[in-house]
Length: 253
Image 1 (cartoon, helix red, strand yellow):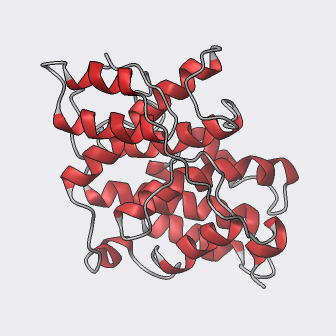
Image 2 (tube, helix red, strand yellow):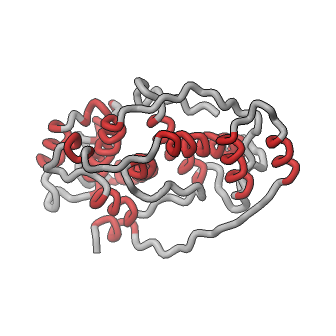
């Protein structure tokens, strides 16, 4: 049994699938002249899943694809932070993680708060409790390099899924990310832009629900499940925000 399974327990939950159609909403956005086909497709996905974003959201947001190496470095910065807190020193000596960070310039892709994590004890309880949000950041980044598509249900990732990403969809700790990247087939820019726009719409529905509106599916917790959507959207928008740091990524809706 892997370290993540021990810490989080197994995941044995079947994804619930619901299809809800809002005919009035569908007619209204299909008749908008300036609406792009990409946005219509994403609104269809949202409404059929029970999310009701504002249909007047802008479609021209100045998105620009970030270099693949920067996306990879952000993913591996998260990997280093997760390993620091989730794997005991006796199983993975700290010098392996610190060497990996230095050899791949990963501190340049961490926030100051994240760099401070590397000063925490490896078994810091508060740090471990908070690091789960990094799992949600990691999923879209790993998807870009071949992992499965990030889900829109708002259900949090299990430790098993994160372990799969760290073991099978990232560079080894003794490797160089630039070399690892040469062997990767990445998602097309068109597909990435579509996915980012989808989570932009989902995030809008979540924000409205957090303010009291009925804009998310039944049983969806606007804070907990909404936090998952927020973190996955953060990574996707970062990926198409060339030249903008992680902490300055525009997450407005």
